[in-house]
Length: 301
Image (cartoon, rainbow, N blue to C red; front, top):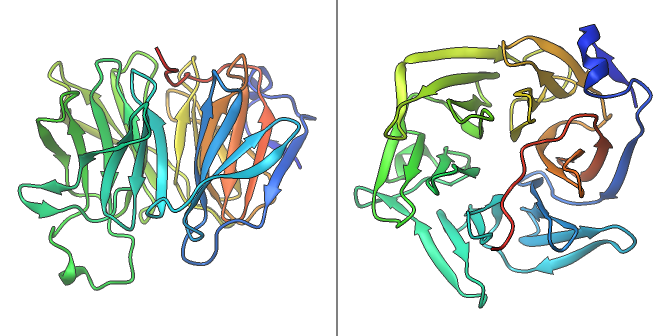
């Protein structure tokens, strides 16, 4: 599959002839794709969500894809907190959960001001331990049947005591990621087809006056902004029209990894050196080797 380069500086990031490997297929369905890839460094394997089939999958070199856990309450986005515990956005239960070392489940968030969340989608953790997650409407149920009248993006303190609504004017807030120095939070809107960027305030909330469109990812090929990650140099990787878009810190589209699938649902860094870019589509899991490392997720301490 080709790497479509719009800017020559993409050569530093990924080789033109780099092989794009398919690691598994047959996941998902019309109502929920493969999603939420997450590298588990100390185990040397990747977890990802098979939403429609209500299971968590595991990929490892040499053994391929196996079922790791089922059921999962149709979990979507996955990440780890500073202690290396798994965080999951669960569609069916409309909550964010944490898996403890003994396997028990802690409910991290399931309501805002006494009203049940919509359908938490993706989640990231800041270096201070605060949890940020998106909560769009992504359900066939009529909007008036939901408790909340908006799609929200939230910040939760590490003690799980304070949930703050950061922004509520997205149509479908989906993937989110911090810049390497955590001075910027990127949030994409799948319905509007773009990524917005916000400067961070010292208290962990968004400087709303800094709100700007970072990059528009629409085009003539299938694919919308969905899961999103950042590398150590601040380049942003996000599903968009035609594949995985690579965007520099100034918002310039450097090029697209055209993996040939209908849409990119999420991406994740992994491998021993964090230079493997894993990606999920509606029905497949794949990977491509990059020249620049991605921002790592925490391992167990």
